[in-house]
Image 1 (cartoon, one colour):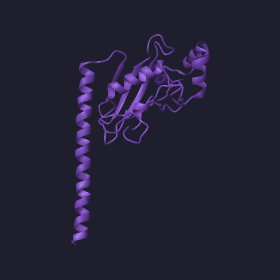
Image 2 (cartoon, rainbow, N blue to C red):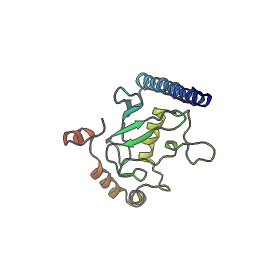
Image 3 (cartoon, rainbow, N blue to C red):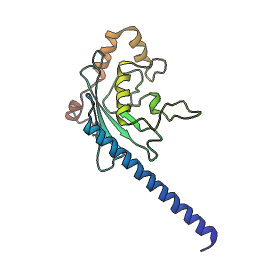
Image 4 (cartoon, helix red, strand yellow):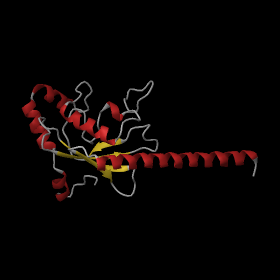
Length: 188
């Protein structure tokens, strides 16, 4: 084997080893977060791995009281990248939701779900965790950022006609159990 071939093979093995070690750190971090969620649950929030892959989670959020989302339940999925917690999880609503900062595919516009750091617009930080992400999303339901909407109509209605806004919320929302009964997948 030539020196350049050996160097390339060594670099490849080092890269694979780094990824495996990094993934091990991700697994440890997620196991720790899961334990914290189980030991100290937050009312209105739950999250658990969806299967044997601990980097894919399902979550449930209850709509905050005194908002158009009160008494509604929302299912979400979280996918953690291989460099978590240095990069944010990808979070999607699986339950249809009408909101200024959520598009019709369930994507969420929230600063903490965007990579942070120098020269980046996001506010993600490695000190954040699954619980803080879900709490932020729950808060966003009642306090949208209408300056940066994904759904312009919802932003306009939020500011101008709360009664009509609530009608749209209720028309779009489907309880997860009803979705499953009707053969619609919530991703769970």
